[in-house]
Length: 278
Image 1: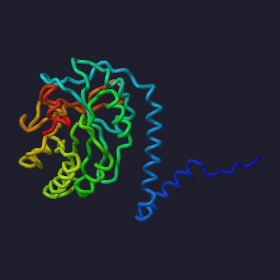
Image 2 (image 1 turned 45 degrees about the vertical axis):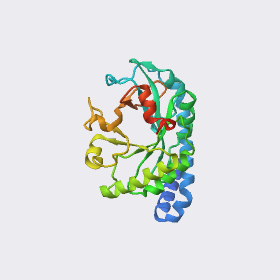
Image 3 (image 1 turned 120 degrees about the horizontal axis):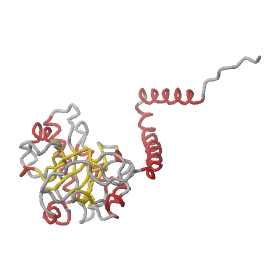
């Protein structure tokens, strides 16, 4: 009988190769700078293919799956690559619980070097379906506010007068002193205002607002996140309320953040559409 020879499986070889390559990049910062963009792009392509394959298997949704706050007429969502490949036609045609999705804030960037892999597609398709679009940036306090603003502006490019004012999402300190965080955020919002001629809105959680923003940035609109029956921040301080992170939306395979505007449709347009800012 011929004795079998155990040969290292090809999958194990690949695993060892990538582990070794990862270790090499970790101990060689210059090599990491060279290869990192290609690694990110390759990963994005692979994940996009995965998302595309899953689209035909999306289940139909007939209700939002959460209780909507009463007496609010303007509803919207905020999304990123976490919601995978969105079927914006189905989002636009969904009407449930006496509400439709009127606006969508879409993640563009994070920090000074990360672009959301679905930003361009989400932006185009949401606008094509007449859902009002606005871009948002996830703020990283350990990075220069100026660098982050430059990257956000470069990624988003031109905004239409019919688009919504940009948003900066601030919900972590990353271990940075609160004053330094606010100083860097001040640098960020100033550059945004200079670029697009409108003050950006600041998104943050209720507790984060109380701990770090109360008494600061008084000239800027606040988008508050609180998943209870009401917000802790006074109602006259916020413009948009993110009331859940677990809504179900037709055309989106994962749970979604859902928001309400404090006012009617005309007030919404005057408050948040770029071309109507005074």
